[in-house]
Image (cartoon, rainbow, N blue to C red; front, side, top):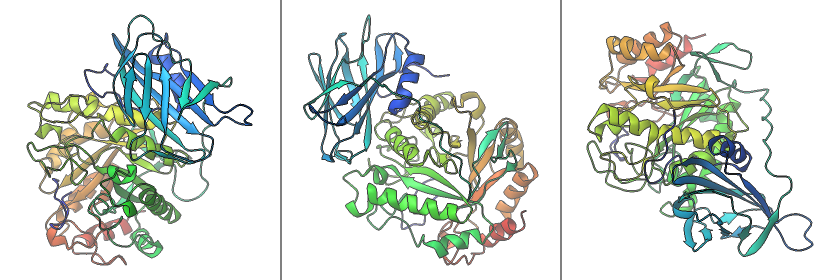
Length: 513
């Protein structure tokens, strides 16, 4: 949904890589071996431990794997775990023995001289505490055989063979308190006991724009009383929009609002939401990538507005990090990307939906795109089995080809996300019956944003009735005190005092079981 005027505005089967960055799932070491074997049986993985003579434990662990392979090329990923003292700056080295040539990479500055390959940290991921890991990936050419590197170095320290090799991590224990662990059963969301559940609640905007504007992390309080006020509306879900540059700690963000400070603030809010029995939905809202085409929200390359699609440079790394952060808490739901609109950039709907799923070089978009399959892969290869929401196109208002192009989820835990406002194209029961009902018959459907720009609630009353009649989920935009005359703000005070718009959602939620 569009923010108030003071904020930058915004509008309401796998394929081999075609070119550039593709399938940018930044794999955790435990999963690399499995994925590598499945996608390229002739290419083994390698694990190595770096250490000094006589050391009691390896200084570092390196896991290498091929994540996809096609004629003449492959994609690789390397996960480095620092088992020694904290380092501020790392350089990973290895050599190819099969004539492989790195063409480009991400998560590090990649270079190759002869057979020797070097990956040096980026500015935002150079610090590795003891026990911390970093994952980086690359594209390379190959022919004949594609053997893995025999050895690695970390900052010049040689690596030796790790006889144990990677192992699959155990499933995290199911939580015993707070909100339910939601999962997909046919076209329903169910809890741990198999009971049907719905997600009914609000959006809590701020985490997507405050940090990149240098004004803080959240817009307004996110302390316990303010979160309790949401629960007092009988909400059971809170959607939390995020900014990828702030999460990754990129240099253009104020140090007070980026990296660890930002991540810790998000984790604290997630914990408070859960403590009040509500499901947290972490969602990627604003991203890197310059787009100045049709319906552009801004001309900035940085994450200062809504872009038509996620980018291959940073977004997979963002989702790998987010999934690693929350994978042991399956109560947290992941919403891959706020409102894709490749249809505004590409000449045809077919191209838009192909771009949406597969990414790559999309017509009309000047940066390399990460598709929904790329982002889902980036989540799943960490071992995260959390429920994932996947939006449609046309600012998430069009699900007409969602079933045809849906990404493949090895965890089978995928739901469709949809947004609607009174000014959208698909804003009538006729459209909902023709385009939404077929999707809702196959997979769970979540209206991640509902709202209207009238300062009333007649439109969302219709939306909620349609969704109630079918047992579907919806979340109101937004739990912020922006004055509903400039956008669909639900409250006038963080104690939960509703606006004329918000009173419709509040009273409706309180009437639910």
